[in-house]
Structures are given as structure tokens and as C-alpha cells.
Image 1 (tube, rainbow, N blue to C red):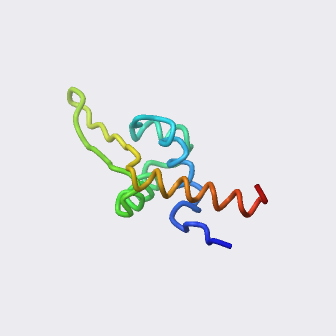
Image 2: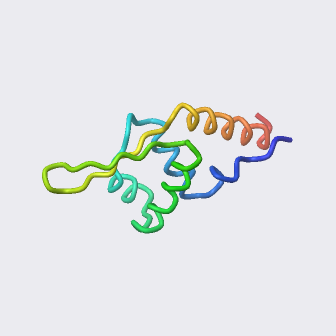
Image 3: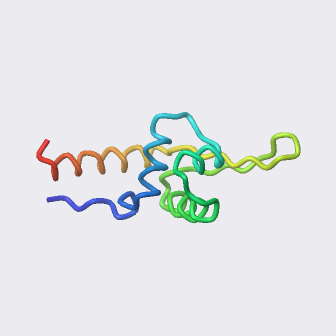
Amino acid sequence: MKELDPLLHSQLRLAVMSILMSLESAEFTYLRDKTESTAGNLSVQLDKLEKAGYITVTKSFVGRKPCTSCKVTAIGRVAFGEYVETIKTYLGY
């Protein structure tokens, strides 16, 4: 049986990827609120996903406020799809 991607098997990283898969992009505050995580923990997990090439993180300003936006990459979409298919094999689907 194929092994699960350890990067995606983390609860918070999986939650972030699941949210981003259905959106064009999402702001940091939206992800923080939806995952009910702390800003520090979310920041660390986003950094891991970005370093793996699964997401892109864009920092900008809206007016005078900083805005961090995240988006799934093509590599991330493939990795997530493979993760879901692997889970299905574990479940017998």
C-alpha cells in the first residue's frame, strides 16, 4: 500500500490544503479563523507547505494593513489528489 504524504498528514496542513483546494486563494486571517489555529502555528505550517511547493504565499498591503494571501500550486493540487486517492485505498474505495 502506498504511504501517506507526511507533509499533508498533519491535521492543520491538511485543513489548510482542503480549504485552499476549493478557493482561488485565501487570506491568512481567513485560514486562521477557519482552522481555529494560532497565528504562530499557522504561519509555521504555511511555511512548510510553501517550501514543499504546495502553496504560494503572497504578502502585500491593503491600504496600510499587511495582507498575506495563500494559493495552491499545480504541484500542491497533484499532491493533494494523490493523498486523497491513497486514503481511499486505505478505506477500501
